[in-house]
Length: 470
Image 1 (tube, rainbow, N blue to C red):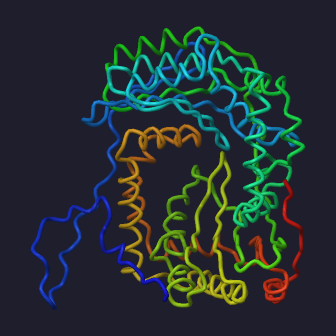
Image 2 (cartoon, one colour):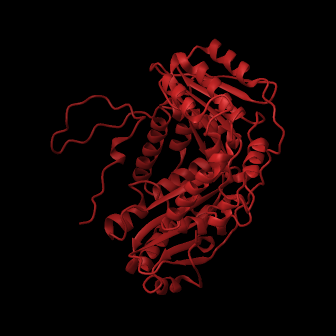
Image 3 (cartoon, rainbow, N blue to C red):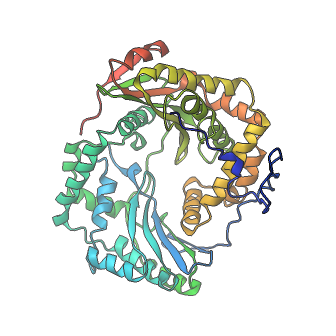
């Protein structure tokens, strides 16, 4: 049985002021939607220490808790071609304790504050922090400082952590979605860290303790780092803690990562996965990044085309045709670069028809502007989702970090809802014509060569590759 479409857009998620009304009787029109509400960023305080570390305080909410997070300007983007996952391995070893506390003591101390401490490595940023009861916000600031400034980096734990990473790699290389995305990014960002997603087993085994320590020394420093505290807290105590814990922090090293320029790789690539019952599709191309004036309209256009449950591509290949269960498109941004991608896992014998329908929906949006009513539902959904996502301490910290990464002002957040609702049908068509160019799209498909590969040849010349090996 094909899944039924849910009327998500009718909810007007989040920012629609819908009054309490009695249920409509048969034949009655639903009540009108309320006026969209803008996202109001809480008043913030920001200051910078002499060593370059910035501190932002965001009083927010009534729950007596605080989110404390240090964001470092380092991540996988700082890895060389022969050291993929070095940033992750460094993060693993940093979490093994400090010169004054072992890992268990760090965890116990964070738990006594009513929270926990975690470290996450991303493409462009590494974050360290957690949620604590409000009275412990200064103590969490000090604990974070100890973790990033004085890690023990025990060599005795390195082999165990590398074995964990090798096991994760083995699992990843058996997942068609991961294989497809890795090939897609490699083609889109050749010779750049953004395009290097999966290491080899030999590469992980070759990551020495000296390499980990050098990575930490070069990239864990105050220059460009940002400490965020959001929620309920004693501002004076937190200011003092930040100064005491970080003001004498100095580090030498190279913080500059290589800039990226996505390639126009209009290729068709097939990754062999014999006997696969499904084909995994990645179709996309470079687009503008968040600093561009078209970025918000691009997000609206993406949501209408394939980026929401009520999007056209989802309605076509999931609801109407039953080719797939969970198609999705998205705009994925990095520092000063971004790409649009449509993904789907489709039944192998309809690989070609599914692609034909995806291209059909792209061309339809390029050919004519969408109806106002359809676009209004998408605008309400996106604007409401934006407000919901930012209605938490962690959400606010995440958005402020996003602004800092992309060099945006707070007006991006406070004006986002208005800009979404200002997007017109004609602008959606312009965005589709400008950025969703079928002839320039990269298509990567992982699937059964006996069933799926012949269907792809009608779309052009196909390059066949073997899947990445662990």
